[in-house]
Every structure is written in structure tokens, then in C-alpha cells.
Image (cartoon, rainbow, N blue to C red; front, side, top):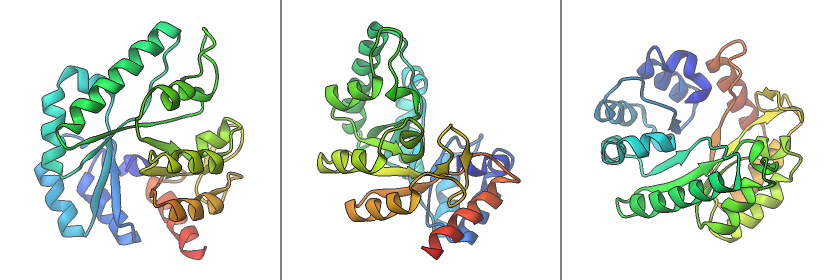
Length: 234
């Protein structure tokens, strides 16, 4: 739903209606914009949509863990993905790894899976030479919501990473996104990322596919339409 944030932040129900009308069957939330989760769950049921996850910051868990759990239960959503972390030092990396592991255990006891969504910076060294992505993979058992475009933009092979994480049972869902190698996002089929191959590999390994196109050009719903039409043509 971040892809259609230009509508969602003003009228989430309208955004869900338009997404469902395009043929999408599930959504991932990036905020409920003041709407009650119970109400949003009713909207989803009426539109034939499922909630496959939320993007929820680590700060929200630190501020009100019980409230976050309550919201996810009311929404009927059992996946919480931390969308962005950027530890600058080894000490900060260690602290973040410890927090993620702790919250993963605590959320699991509540029936909620904690995952992490990458951008490109996790594949580059921080100022202490630590590669955050490598730390996540080697020091945690955390499921990872791989943003396949940002892996590509980091000059890594998303297909190889999908195979590795899938074999370890750590790839429950992906972001399918297109763009140019320099970091400029595009709707599916309009960039240079290997989106068709990623789409096939995701189906082969059973990962749920979240479509994302985030540039709002000319609007979020227009990009969402381009994306699903591309997928239908594959």
C-alpha cells in the first residue's frame, strides 16, 4: 500500500477499493492513517483482500509493544516487517541484532512473525566495515522480506539470494520491484532489474509476492495498474 500512499493517506478505504479492482488479492500496509484496525479488517473482508503484512518500525515496538501486537491481532495480520535500519558502527549493529532477535522471540510467542526488509545500504560496509546484511543472515534466524530491486541496485544477484534464503526457510515473502541499476525505481517492466526471472523464482520457492512501485508517477494507482498488467502478460 506504500505504492498508493498518495490515495491511502487521504482515504485508505478508497485506496483498497481501487487496488482490489485492479485484481490484487492481498496487501501489505505501511500505516493505517488513523483508521481502526478492526474497521480496516472489515474493509478487507468486503473487498476480498488479505493482509499479508505491515511495515512497522522498530521504534514502534520499543514505544508500545503490546499496542503493536493488539493492532496486528485486530487487523488479522501475523507478519510484521521492520522496513529500515542503518546501524553506523559495529556497536550499533550488535545492539540492533540483539533487539531484532529479542523482538522476534517475543512476537513469535504472540503468533506474529518478525521479518526485515532491505534496501541497498545493507550490502555496503558501514564506517566500521560491517556489512549489516551479512550480520542479519549469519547471526539471526530472522525471516527476510527481500526487496529484490534493492538487491539488484546493490550489484548483488537477487536470484542467488532468493535460492539461499529459501533453502534455509527464511524467505516468506519478497518485494517485486523494478528500476535502474543506479537506484531509480520504475514500474514493473520499465526498468532493468530481472523482474520476470524473480517472479518465476518466487513462485518456484513459494514466496509471497508483494508488488511495489513507489515513485507516484503520475500516480500510485497508475503505477499499480502498469505493474499488474505487466504480470498478467508474463
